[in-house]
Image (cartoon, rainbow, N blue to C red):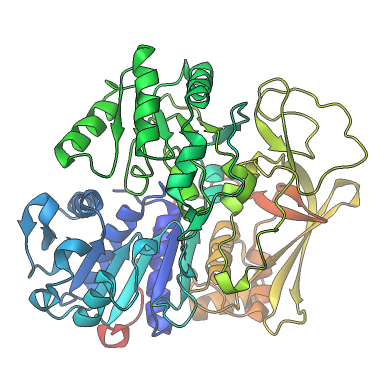
Length: 565
């Protein structure tokens, strides 16, 4: 199985973390980025290099237990792996690699025995309070290392899961965002649409970080509103293959289902109390195209994989950035014949969260009320798409907006779901300069200055000296690997450095990076986008001729098992 570049980078970042740090790493990867493949390849590589390593991979749903186990068998057919899951009818404890659900295993840590690495998938779901299943299991298992994977490093009850007194993770070892995935072509574009049907949520109480479900459902589950919601789903979804609908509650789900069924559509309702056999049957029929829609009450989020979904109807308001990200994530997967996924946001959740691919998860203690501004947007009069307020032409249909009014409300609707929907521009590069940049912060960076036509200048700052395992360092490593050509080295000092440190080595100091700047490829163009008062460099077009094939050097992570543990 061929790994994507960021999946390889994630595994390398984990090894880098384990080599240089003693605390636990967290990997943050966008929904649909292929976490199960990364987990499988990491497990295979680790055990092949360190044969006595014992690994447990734990999660909270049987579907993901089965998915992660099957993915490992795809990567490594004869892996010494087993499954402990009551839902899957298997109770294995002693395999060298164990995939398990927390409900099935938390009372049986003593049966599992000594464990080197505990991998927690969807780790934002792991409640670590003193009386929780997770706390009991981790305490009794006492693994040497815990590695977490998630798309949303946040919990409603505590904020960021890698900060604070009770955090089990020391930081983010690697991150791959929705924006990167869409830009790379690995994730589907989400196109948001403005709905005429809205709900008044003012005054609804908050419970556990989200709208209180009883009050929320009372505001949403209204006969006239339900008919109007279905009207708009029909309007936008008549030529779409698969609809996934999020309801505001169980009764609401059944009401929407009754209306859709009456209008001749075939679908099903999946709720928390739906029997497993029925649920599996509905999902199988939906994936097979025999059902047009599924309605759920925030049940079909993490672990639900139906790539052909090309319309999401969010009829459930939420204050939870985790739930919102998971809901939208169901439409991010690619599928044959799928061009994009429409987001019908009846609940106006994008009012609350802004760009999905630039959502900032912060600690609760860092929040200063709920008055944070979000990027102003507007609705295209031609196609109803939600676009940034500053664009003069709709990126979806080409409609030209009239000249803006002198005043713009800075607290306007922030519903552009993806910041990549802001129009970026390619600029032709005439020259590139590199410098060692020192600011008020103690860590220097490599300053990259692009000189473009008409003397326009754009800047990047490459953080190669940041802490090993940190997101800035990982991003800088990727940038260096993408933009270096070791075969163009000419200066004797550069050649000597490469001979001494290795031709594939990444400089660890800005001084070394500056020395090696002659082997950095000069791009023909850079893609830039305005970000407030500044411009951000999104991409380089290196346009270099194809090199003759060079054998890939065998990669060694370069530390012993004793150093690892």
